[in-house]
Length: 248
Image (cartoon, rainbow, N blue to C red):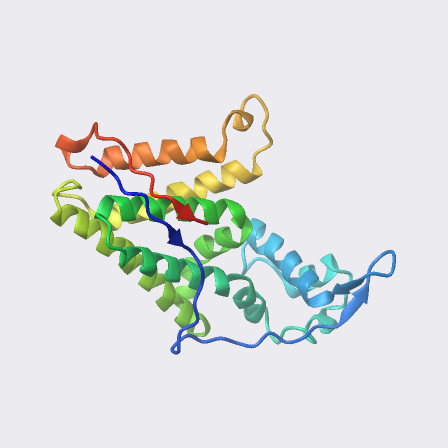
């Protein structure tokens, strides 16, 4: 099947119904050599590491404060609650994901090209900010339980709806399997990409892991081939895989 080269620009946009909290200016400390350091950014970096490794609810404010060598009470000069720290870490990532998914879903391309574009952008995003997106994925149940994060849950739902629309279009167009389970496909693909990004970014490259032998492009090629083979209409199994040009 012939493919057209199309450029997809992935950038977040603000919407009128999106909750945006203005970032508060944190105090600046002096690092070694006298260079100013934004204490707020240090707190966010420490919290990101801990939330990604141990989980949000298992991490305490004292642990985060200890990581940046401040008292727990001093942390509250920068953030009112632990939830606010979490929000600051994940907000832009979730809104970026929603905006990209909706933009790609609206492109005048066939469903397979749009699906491939989504998968390419998703893997690039997950590997470039792996800890942040690991938190987004791992804390999905916590987000759903919390009224504080309702607007981000709605943004995640909008992303899912865009993926779902593309897959449903593919079934209607005869590109994907007529009995494709859209929900399980999306769930499986996102879990696979999150696991792949974690492996790609965090394993040590030892012989038993063999990560040194894989580039990100090779990983992407594998996932594209694997997923499309699973979801394509049987008669299309051997067709070339489209690779729309994407501005990442």
